[in-house]
Length: 493
Ligand code: NAD
Image (cartoon, rainbow, N blue to C red; front, side):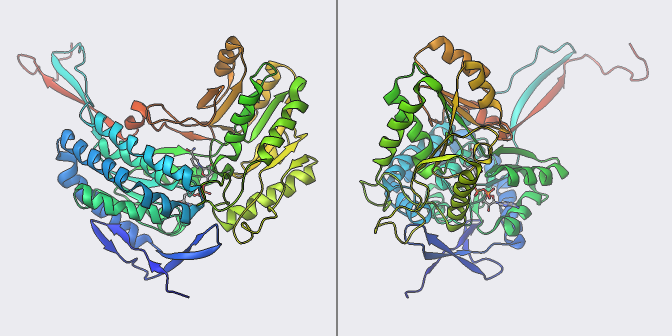
């Protein structure tokens, strides 16, 4: 077998080997075969990356005029546009997302850099109407070294949601991609070099969470931890960051309800529910994994939903006609199959899928057919725990209030969908649902312009939009005396 390519980490503007000298394989989920070797970073690598980022922050980046920083970010965005195809192909090989979907996603990602580049020189403080003989004004300043830790389901997109606002605000960055999908973040560093970022402004270290992620979080020079991933890991990192009172933003898991009322446009709702749960093979934090259907249309809706889902072509993610690709890695594949067994044991009724597809094309990789359960109630594990795969749990309801109670009866609060032709009802639902995003007659829309984040255990802080850059800024009040003299401090009043 041909020797696998050895990837390198990017620290302080240099391509470097890991201090440990160790590598691990990254696997193509379509073939289940390794295709490259990823550096196994450790605490020493974390230390050199954070120090490089700190030196760059103290040096050129913080003092560079924001308009000049913006130019570099715009250039970087244009380079991503130019290299979209190469990036999409690597992402598909590393995590199995559809090539067609990745073309679209990577063409959209530069918007984050353009948008925040546009904001970089519009971060304005205010002069306060001060009640003392003083001019007092505030400035919004960068924090310093920001650590970004991201999962494997949308590596480049989730990288960019953090990198664009953090850099535009004047911070420097150390990013750690997931161990299963490190290749595109490293490829992106070739474009960081070309765009003209000063050395050390953007760094990428690779490896496992405990070995290199935790040392990044606990490093004394780290000022902000931006984490996207599971709620369990997020809560753990939150407690580590709390020891040094570091700022955090957490984008965590979900178990989002997609609620279909009996007055909904049924065909639209079917498409929205299918896109919500089976898009990206169910591996999205916002997956509409709990389908709540009003009793009157339940049977008709499930029939249409099953027929439409059954028509989806599962197969090679590189083929244009494929509509559902593999699960991104073996661990997740085993986990999803485990949840299908749990649902069966809990008494849910399987109406579609439920295991591997019986196809020659999918015989090697980590494939699971789109799976639909009915007869689920909200106390079952399949309704409460995040599966992060192509498994839909259908729950029936009668009244609006019942739908709201079921929807909100979850430890998560990331997103919710509502399908109805009654706009008053839609608006009332949007008030009552405990979720960071509520979609009415649509699902899974996100944009660089619109805040995104979770209620409850789905997270802390917001990404995207103007709110997104505030996560990476701190406010300083400056006082300048306008008094004629400084009074004797021992004479009060
Ligand atoms: P995960 O928590 O296992 O891993 C995420 C990242 O954290 C990886 O880079 C991993 O290496 C790192 N990590 C793991 N343990 C660590 C530790 N002890 N210290 C430091 N870093 C550590 O999550 P996952 O399985 O890779 O991703 C799936 C999860 O991500 C799901 O729960 C999904 O809902 C969530 N997610 C959330 C959003 C959002 O915006 N809310 C978006 C995408 C995915």
